[in-house]
Length: 294
View 1 (spheres, rainbow, N blue to C red):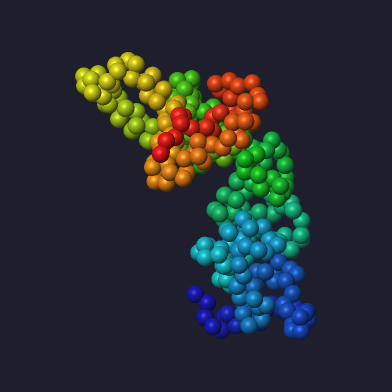
View 2 (view 1 turned 90 degrees about the vertical axis):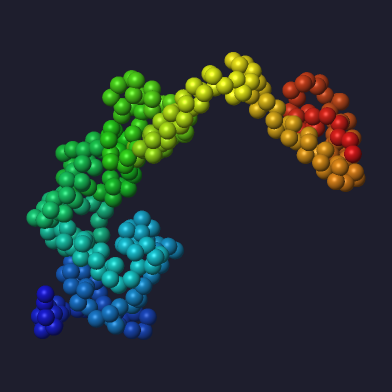
């Protein structure tokens, strides 16, 4: 661990340059060396010691990554940690101040395990984008994750698309799960199934199977036998209209003055009779199921 004397020596080895703006002197950050030595700069010379992660003209996703404690604000230690990480990932920190949107793969510091992992990730992204021979990676290459993972069967997000299944029976099961419980979106943008949905589906399938076995021996569960399902479907089709009718009846019982309004206005009937009516006319669907009486 460096002592105070070695720390002071490091500070003395780097020369800071300043410019005047807003009535006071500010440090220039023009070179990679400036960034590499940023942790040595006295914080009294910083323009600000904190900033929000939103409302700035800066990529919010990058700000969210820098905000390691997720409190919605970025403070000096988080800035320093981000800068030190970026510097350590490059062979030449001057790459950070060049102002380009492309990074040569050769500039990545592959002398460390983390650097090698970063380089491998960059090459994987380029391969997935159909550019395996590319020697640089750009901001546009990295921002669209859907495009990056569009052609990958397994991308580590825990969601399996239907076409990633190895055979037709497994694909059919995945489609059944999606039809019953709804899809989850894979990184590739395709609908898929997660472990949680898989567990839920089979748990509910077991519960349904047990219920069905019980229904085969207990007539109280399916009172109409094989026609019970049809009866339930018919009830569901008219349930909203029946509920609406009885709700109107309750309102009429509460205050008889509401009866006229609950039965719709005479002007609405006059508008209807001028048209060709059918039992499915949309204009009729909003009317009560039967006449409302107080």
